[in-house]
Each structure stands twice: as structure tokens, then as C-alpha cells.
Image 1: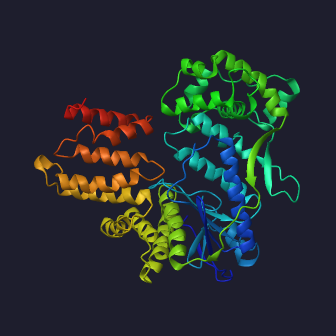
Image 2: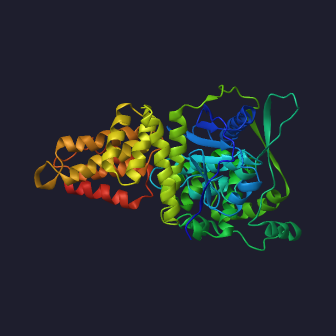
Amino acid sequence: MRALVVTATRIPERPWRYASIPGYEVLSNCDDNQTKEYMRALLRGNDINNALLPKRALRPVATPVTIILFHYIPQEGLAAAVMSKPEHVQTDGVLWGYSVPAIDTPTSMADDVDTEVYCQGLGYNAVSSFLTHSFRFLLERRAPVFPGWLIEGLSGPNGIFNQVDMDTGAPDSATVRQCTLPTAQWISDSETILVRKKSKLATPILPLEDFFAQENMVRSRRSPVWFAEAALFVRWGILGNADKEHSSPVSFWSFVNKACGGPTTERDFRDCFGFGYAEMESRLREYLPKAISGMLEFDVDVDWDPPLPSLRDATAAERGRIMGDWQRLIGVGLRRRNPSLSAEFLRVAGDTLLAPYTAGSREPRLLAVLGLYEQSIGEPGKAREFLEKAASEHVTRPSAYIALAHLRYNEARAHPLGHDGKFNSDQVASVLGPSFAASKLSPPMTETYWMIRDAWAQSEVNPTSADFAVLEEGTSLFWRDRQFAEGVAKLRTLWGLP
């Protein structure tokens, strides 16, 4: 059944306010005090991230993660009917989704993966749910990529980060020195209670050989015990093993680094910890009763009242860019599941993005999103125009550069100027220019290196070994992408490079 669209005129308009803090930008129509408290909580969450991970383990992204904060629509009258029945409601040029994954969930990164845009009602547990998604986004976008068991151990269904509580200390304390980690969960509440009562596992831990093998499976095929064991292993490695000889957090992070660089073996494990899989399985079985029955405290250095910039009225360009980007990404993400609703989101996204542009704004980040939007709806000519302007202003949006490189590549494929249908040097350079620009921005993306590889594959002039350095960087960062590594190896063979 086609989604019902309701234009709600009874919802009062509130002014949109804007602020930027390290790693985030916030667009909010909530009360300023509420918005500031939300931003303070974001910064506190970053401090906890830094406490759980080694320094510089996560690089900040070039494009800040964006949060749209709004007041929940009143549960009465028309608003109540809208929230209980239709799939979305449109008001003030904004499309709010309720039965679709739009509110309180991150956007689907269907065509760009350099940032996330969240639309979130400011209510109970709003900050906690956002921080969980945001932290996972940073973990997954890291390159070389973290092993799956670390990501799930921190932010998965049993992950330790999902449960962290901050001890506020004395009311007049400005700095929090400790965080409390609640008891662990073994698979489920019922399984955890069973282990507590019987002091033995109803569902045993996986042998580590099987545990590490499951990381290569699709996430949906990994077993529930695997997620629980990932959380247990990570909890032990970061917080619970300091009293064991040869088993400090340094040993754990040494093993993580090995797992980031390529497949690991039991020999790698032994080199880091000083013992093998069997001993580790025994230690996990010994550690589990402690983990599910006792809380842990770990040291942090959290500024409870960090300085914040002043909130100001958002400009038309900021409102249009942020709202339009969110609507665009939701629309692209819904194409397969709900084509009609996808089309509605994309239609509204176009209106939202073009409004400030038509009014005269040429802000580079707005131009970049307009280019990505036009590309997503199949308008390469318009996309190229916007993206060229954004790139000339050195916009910090990696996906914009990759989209521009794709457009230039497709144009060169349609009209190759080299011999035998190949690209000449100017055409190769036109593709490599924005690709190299993207490679210098965080997060690194496989699309960047694929684009560089494809440009060289179509070149009439063979690259040198020095030219290949960036492709070697790509194979190192994304070593799990076997197809990319094979493609690079074929180019080396084709061109006779050592």
C-alpha cells in the first residue's frame, strides 16, 4: 500500500539553531539549554572512547558526524494520529519518518561512507543511543579496519561500551575520574542467570580457532555465543587481565594491531600473550563468573562541564544542506525496500537542497551535497557542475571527490582520447586528481583506491613503481578486499612491474 503523506499545519515552527564541536555539527530546534547539555554529553562520550582505546586508535573524520535534534511531536490530536498510522509526516519542508529507519537511527550509507547524519528526538536515553551508533561508525570506518571481534566486543549486542555508566562523584566535582562497567551478559539474561546459579556454562564458549574463523562470516550468520564471547574477550583484554603475567592490556592491543594488518594464527596469538588458544579458553571460562557477577571501574579523565561554542541561528545553507543530506541518504537507502517512499524522500531532498542555492548560497559543502544528490537521481551533468565547483573550493567531503572522479571516468570511457580505446595522460590525470584528494582525507575508503586502480587500468601510458605506491597503500589498508588485491596484482603483471 502506498505510504500516506500528511501535511501537518498544527505543529508550531521552532527556530533552528546551529553549533559545531570537535567531530560533530548539531542542528537543533530544541531549547538551547537542552541542546548544550546534549553536546556536553557528546564530549563526555568522546572522553570515554579515549579511555577504552589507545591514543590515536581512531582518527577523526574529515566530514563531521551531523545530528539533527528535534522536539517530539505532541501525542495528541492530529499528531497522535499521524504517529500511529502513516509512515511519515511532512512539515516545514522536512520529512519526518516514523515507520521507516529514519528517526533515532543512522542513515543508510548507500552511496557515500564518509560521514553519518542522524535525526533524533531529544528524549530519554537520546545521547546514549546516539553515542553507541556514532562510536560504532568510527570503529567500522577505521582503516586498517579493526577485527570484527573487537568491534562487536565494544559495540555489539553484548558489547562493553553499550553498558558504560559514568560515576559523577561529588555534586561540585568538575572532573569525573572513574567510569563503572556493569556486569557482563553471557548471550542473554536467562543464560546469564543460569551461569550465576550453576556456576557453569549451559552454552560453552567457542574454541578460539572457531571463534576467530567466525569473524570471516557475514555478520548475520555469526552465532549468539560468538557475540557474547567477543564481548568477554575484549572485556578481559582491556579491563580484566592486568593481574595475569604476560597478559596486560599492552599484549591485547598488540594482538589487535596484528589482526588489523592481516590474518592471524595461533603463533601470532602466542607471540603477543605468551600462551596459546587452549590456555586462553581456560582463562575465559575462569573469568566469565567474575565478569557476570561484578562491576568494573576504570580510570578516565572526563571534563564534566566542557566549554561549548555559543548556539546561533542556523543559516539557510546550513539548514538546507543538513536536512537535505539526511533526506537524500534515507531516500537512497529505501530504494529497494520501499521505492515509493524512497522517491518521496528524494523529491523533498531536492526541494530542501535547492532552496538555499536558488536564494544565492554557494557554500562549498552545500554544493557538494547537491552534487551527490544529482548523482543519486541520475543527473550526471548537473552533478558534475556542482561537484566541480565544490572541489575547486577544496571542500572536505571525500565522497564528493570520489563522485567527481567517477563522473570524469565515465566521460573518458565514453570518449577515450588515447590509442586502442585507452585514456590519454590528461584523461588519467583528470580522474586521479580528485581521487588523490579523497585519499588524503579521513576516513580512507575502498572506493578511492578502486577508482585509482581503474584509471590506471585504462591508461595508455604505463604507471611507474612510484605511481603504484598509492595502490600498495590501498592493499595494505583494505587487505580483506581480495578482489582489489587481485586487480592490483594483475596490473603489475600486465605492465611488468616487480
